Image (cartoon, rainbow, N blue to C red):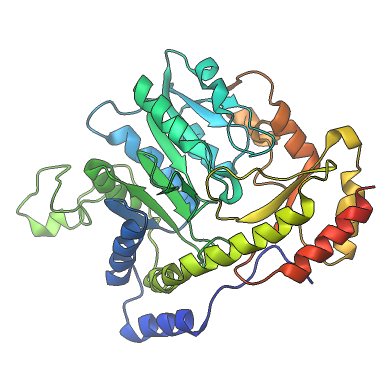
Length: 389
């Protein structure tokens, strides 16, 4: 394919890191994971980072942690404000833990939650806001953070698509009480599979570490006790205190992550240069709606919505892209209430999901990679210029 959705970002450093882990004989979670967690927390200006096996697991463990904190834990039946567009596993842990979702529409140009509707979404049962920055473009995280603080709400930040983006000079993934990242193959850094939870809360950090690994006490930090330690080492080594999972990463994932994290600033710079090429070609063309950058995007991909007023046939456009060797896909997960799975959720729509539906029916994205894509983007533009008529 001439211009694919994803691309390999590894070099010889990542392959050597894997071989070093293999040679060490320590493959399961160990010192490399701890080293990666420390480096990750430092890069994003957080007290703690907890590595897991995917961003989806990060969301699951993060939500679970909020149910077991000592003060004001979440409870089944509590309500959560969520955007109309996000990935499925942004929402699934909320359903699995018995929370009710209140969907708020997105802005058509940023694709992020329309924070002007937060007051409308708020009620006496609201306990949390889930903020999601779509495809590298920061949501109005500062406004969500302020709203959450004003109303005593938890702010959960799903940053799985927007690593290294910035808002007001602050990295996304550092605004939430809990923030999550993905390090899947096609994302900003790749650890094959992987994810990270970040927080400044010592208790959440300890809870997440226990829940990540069976719910046992073995990985709890010495600085915070969730329970009183016993002198019986035989039983303490396998003492379970929380309903947990096994979503541990491997040493290989962390070793690769350390190498990728070193490259992240330069890779983001290249993605941003590609974004300038893309935006300069498409801006001002009223047939197409592209993302309006809020803050400083890390440019996961290039989104394009066919202006519904122009009555452009999306299937015709996608066929032309296929013929031209250009990969494409639905924007994130589309408008989530449109999916069959919604029948299993307790939810309410806060008004109409007008922009979410337009995005679902008229939008798609193409890839952005950390190398020069000038020729690929120019071909994409040329095809769209013809197919969009």
